[in-house]
Length: 488
Image (cartoon, rainbow, N blue to C red):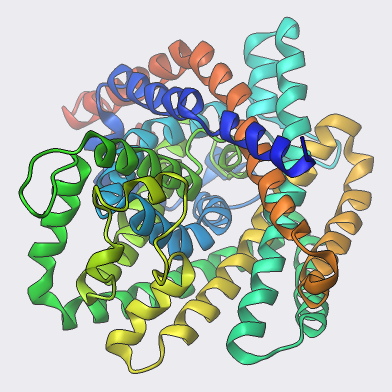
């Protein structure tokens, strides 16, 4: 069996139903264990995000807002533009519904990750906060579980190089070459140099850049998306109708329910939802551990906003742009006739998927600007993902090999970013090696989730206890029994 076939098989096992089921069931367990607070407390979470913090709350390396933006910098990216389009193209409009469901239960997972990240973080020799799954597994579960912490850090070390450095820079070089004819060698120099200038400054500089770039770029992308949706406002009811009907396998011709279409919509929606918001993957808590916030629950409340912003807002806008613009031909919409083709992960001949489909949807209303919106959006989002994942990778490196390894890891990171972007220029010579990198990165990213989810489940009683104490104190303050200034 060829190496690529073996890798494909391993990837299908890692991202198969057992893993997707574990991610969803963990989210459901935490959602109900937390008494739905991750759903009903969303307005409160936005209020806490912009809360002014003083005194002991100010201990940490970056503000809670910067920590969230750093986490979002690694999640808002190709998944929001190309991933949503692929989910709709292969799984049908119903895949969007299952993306929403994944995000809703994912808020509880992100909340728990944020709580545990701050609760069990440490201070390194340089006085910086460090945390994440490897630390809350080691410090929360004790020495006998240290092997699990090292397992997470090992997969995180290599997944960061693949997902964060290689794939992102490769995607940027490919997008800029195909849209503007820009040489991949030029892209490699600029993106590697830009990344080096930021990541050498560590989490504080990454947080500053992420806090400036992510809100602006996300805002511009959302503005363009809302403009397209507004221009096709009459198609919005039909778009939602197709989403809800497709989610349960209802066919547009009114011929009943197709179990195959239902399963396909669920599988693609769940997989793409998790790929986009990373709830349960274990990457985001590494950023939240650096927040200037001494209250674990308060940071957990802010952390869960990442899933809301990434999937329920940005991904939904992309989905509605595609579904309201009418760019998907009837023969390309998931149906019993093309189900067998779609089950293989392919599209019927002549049907777009991924970024080209999103670009076509924007082009349909914005007079040729679709390609520019997608190319620029992918470039900026991918660059911020490079920054966010660089921090995740170096923290995993420090856990495995001590703080002395960080400068070496940063140099390795820049080399991988440059080489992966330049590889586009050598695509004819290296063949499908880029696809192999995609498969390896995707597989390693999935392997990160398993030890993290085990740690969260075993430590969930601590999360439930801390959350109850926090909101009991809040309720007492609201009832006027203590001074409002004592409220967390």
